[in-house]
Amino acid sequence: MSTDSGSGRAVRSRATMAVTMGIIIIFGMMVAFTPGILVVLIGGMLPAMAALVTDRSDYRLAGLTIAAMNLAGCMVYLPQVWDRGNSLAAGVAVLSEPWPWAVMFMAAAGGWALLWIGPLFARFVVAAVIDVERRRLERIQANIVAEWGRGVIDG
Image 1 (cartoon, rainbow, N blue to C red):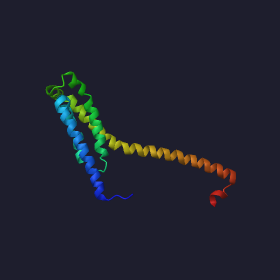
Image 2: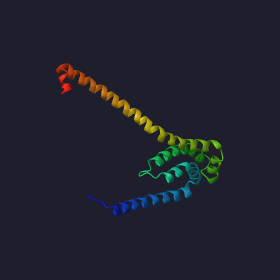
Image 3: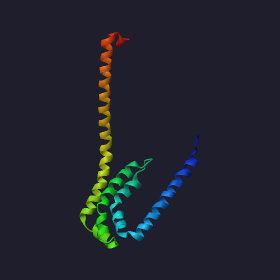
């Protein structure tokens, strides 16, 4: 099945349009029903927005990782906004304290840390798996040499 670049662009633009419309609808509903939570999310998710705008990779995985961690940091303060009446003033009251900003931005920094540590951890795990497999193959080779003699290796 062949695809030309024009149809790929059309499918991508339709998907982008659908996502954009979904965001607009959700944003409009949040303005109407949860303005305090919206204020906290807009303020707290600034690092995620910056990461998503600047991430130019195909799937934007770096931006999504930072956004997920940033959202986790914001979620901590949403119940406080809800308990204070979920008004615009409640959202501003939460954002007027320094600790929510620190937690939300440090959560985004945790996303950056995952992006930095993740490849190092993966390299460590892959090296460990390769080492275990190498040792297993060496044991098998030693058993074969013991049974058939050194001529098996030499050719």
